[in-house]
Length: 137
Image (cartoon, rainbow, N blue to C red; front, side, top):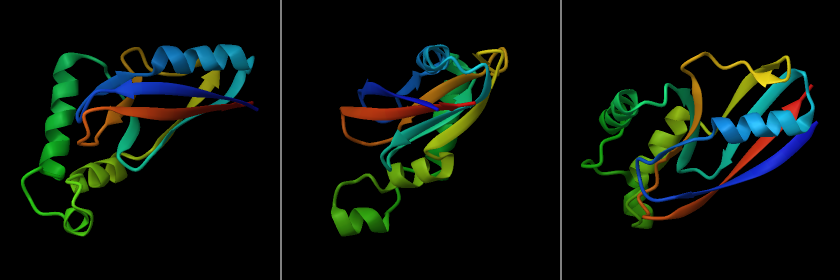
């Protein structure tokens, strides 16, 4: 087993960060030829998924999340805590904090147009996110 930490500075709600090169580097460093790479973001207002990292589909994803958990409705979390990020928690819970990608021949088994991304969903203007990459094989 091999584990490394990736630190990501984000700059506001809706930012989408391509983690693929850094996860691929972790796989290379691990020396694992056949196995699994798990990517997990610590925190309840960020998420990890895969997507084609191009402006159109990134915009589509952001729009879809705003439909699922809109900014302009009341959230019980906001009433309890007053921090205005109830939608952030809901969006993060729907997408999820982690994913697992097969490692085949020492490389991530992502599709041609499939990248691993971090979604910053918090309303704060800046966050430092911690992403754990664990490679087993």
